[in-house]
View 1 (cartoon, helix red, strand yellow):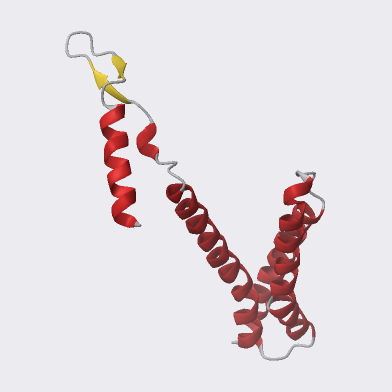
View 2 (tube, rainbow, N blue to C red; view 1 turned 180 degrees about the vertical axis):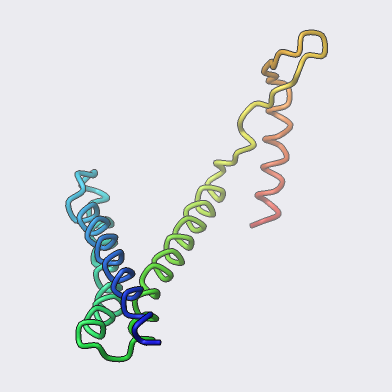
Length: 141
C-alpha cells in the first residue's frame, strides 16, 4: 500500500509547492495600489502559513518515508483548505456588493422582437427591477 501512496503523495506535494510558489509570488510581488498592498501581503502570509502547516510537513514525511497516509492527507489538505478559503472570500465579496446595492438586476433587460427575431434593449423594465431590488434589500436587512 505504501508503495502506491508515495508517488501520489510526491506528485501532490510538488503541485502544492508550485501552487504556493505561484500564488505567493503574485501576492507578495503584486504591483497593486498601495492602499490594497497590505491585503495582498496578508493574503500571501496566510497562504505561506497554510503551506507551512499542511504541505511542508507532508513533504517532510515523504522525504523520511514515514506515515504515507498521513503525508497524503496533509498534502491534500492544502488545496482543499485553499479552495474553501477562496469560496468564503468570494461569498463575502458578493454579499458585500449586494449590501451596497450593486445587484445584477440593474442591467436593462432584453426583449426579442416577434417579427424580426432581433434582440432589442428595453429600458422600461429597469425602474421596476430597481424597485424590486430595493424592496428585497429592505427585507434582507
